[in-house]
Amino acid sequence: MILQEFFRQNPKVALAFSGGVDSAYLLYAGINSGCDIHAYYVKSAFQPQFELDDALKLANELGAKMTILDLDVLSDSVIVQNPANRCYFCKKKIFGKIIEAAKADGYKVLLDGTNASDDAGDRPGMRALQELQVLSPLRECGITKPEVRRLSKEAGLFTWDKPAYACLATRIPTGVEITSENLSVTEYSEKTLSDMGFTDFRIRLSGNDAKIQVKEEQLEKLLLYNRREILEKLKPYYSSITVDLEVRS
Image (cartoon, rainbow, N blue to C red; front, side, top):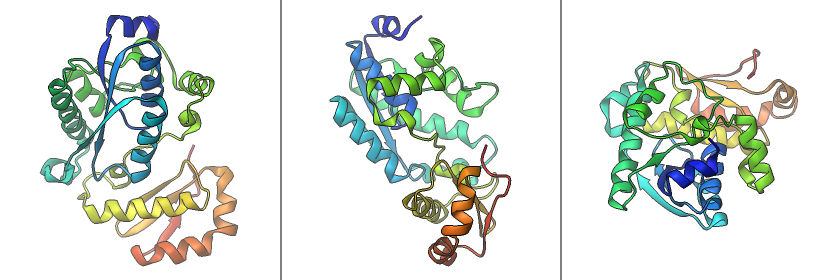
């Protein structure tokens, strides 16, 4: 099956829209196929501001219908406790919110941007999507991540080379309580490095310490040119700041 055929079979759909590469291309493809597609962005403490900014920018460029839904994920005690399967409960809560809003707007089919490169395996988040009967047309049509980027570039979408991004909660070790404070500190710290020109990196919490993970090609920049500035700006929020020499793959 090709995407155009999918949208012919599903001419009216809701889309869980994150502003990332996959859901951005899916929104474009739906509009380009003449589908009545409505994007829903769930705003929570787990999403940094730049994700919402990118989502709004793309929706505006495409003339897409987009609704922002506020969700207090930290009101859920199970999610806050941060168990190994936290993603399952989080996805259920987020997508349940979208399903409720979409149904009220007259949309009965919900899509997400899972692509053919994503390994479903036994991932808790994937299980939640299956239980909620969320469709993943990129995956169904065999479209891989590299293909999504290529097609997005051809379509002129600014998201085509946007680095993959996992929610802020993934920076906090399993079993460590998630708080608004450790989320906001993580968002501030990652924005600080982003403003310095770093891309596709993570700052992970370990106790009250920060571990910075960058790509190998950016390691020299961090250690030789930005080390002092990073310490100056981040040290007030952590006991110590370390760099992962194994780097990000």
